[in-house]
Length: 420
Image (cartoon, rainbow, N blue to C red):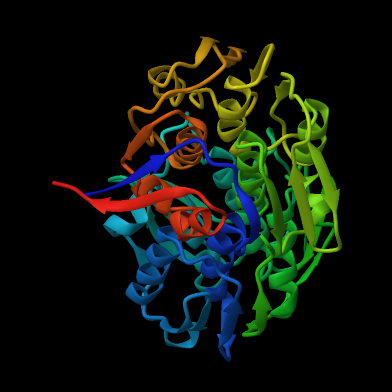
C-alpha cells in the first residue's frame, strides 16, 4: 500500500503542464476498436491507472497495443479476436462500458461485464441500453454482464431522458457504423464528447453537431486507423487552479483550452482570485483577501461536478459562508468527513454542503474516498498546518498522473511512501 505525506503551509509557485483529458482518453481507446484497417496512433494520453487498465482490456480482446512512450499508444485492432470483455479490469472501472458500443458497432455483438468506478452515487446504464435498442440491438443482462447483439444496426432518432455523457458517447460510437442516419437529442456537450466525435471523424466517421444539443451521425461502411492527439484535461487543470488559490500562490497552468475552464475561472474570480488567460494557458494567483461563494454543479458549460470536491476544500478555508449544491451525483460529499478531521466546519444536508470557512486546517490521517475526493484531500494537506497523510491513494492514481511530482515542482512538500 502507498500513501501521500504532505507538510502543509507552502505557497505553490511556478508552472505546471496539464496532461491529456482522462474522460476523453477512456472513451477514445475503446473506440479505436472500430478501425478495421490500419493502426491508431494516439498521443497526449494521460499516464494513469485507468488508461493502463484499458490497455490490458484491449490486449485481452486480441488488439496489439504498443506503448511508444508514457503518453503515446499505437493500437492495432485488426487483430481483435474476441467480443467477450469479462475481466476484473472491466468490472473495476466505469468507462469500460464504452467497449459495448465499440464492439457492437464493429462486430454486431458484445458481452461486457457491468462496470464499476468511484462510489459517488447510482450510475445506471439505462440510457445506453435505450440507445442500443433503438439502433436495433437486443440487450440482456445475465450473470452480471451486458449482452448486445444485432443482425444489423440501423439509424434512429433517439432522445435521451437525462443528459448523460456516457450514454451520449457510447451511442454515438455505436451509430458510426449503423445503416442510415442517427439523430441524438438532449445530449451532453462536454469537451470530451466533442473530442471523441473528432476522433471518430478522423477515422472516417460522419459525426456532426457534437458540443450542441443535437448530434447527427451518418453511418459509414468501415473506419480506418488514424493519428490523434487527446485534448487537455479540464479537470486536472481546474484542480491545479484551485490549489494555486488555496495556497495563495502564483501558478501558470499550461497546455489548456481556457474556454473549457470558464466556469471554474469565473468562480475563482468571484472569490477574489486573479485569473489571466493566454492562448493555451491560465495564470492563477492571489493578491488580496478571498471570500466565500455559492456553487451549483451542472452539465457543461456549467460548473463541473468533478471539480466540486477540490473546490469544497478551498472554500473551507475562506472567510464567510459558502454553499455547494451537487446536482449530478447524490453521494459526492463523502470526503466532507475527512475534511472535518482537519478542522473544517461543513454541514451536509442532502446534496447541499454548507461551508463556514475556518482560519486554518490542521494535518491529520485521512483517506481518498474516490478519485476527485483524493484531489480534495491533497489540496487540504497543502494548506493545513502540520503533516497530513492520505491513504487509499489508488483512487488518485486513476485520474491524476504523477500528482506528487507535479506539486513538488511547484514547491509543495509532498512524498509518496510505501506502508504496511
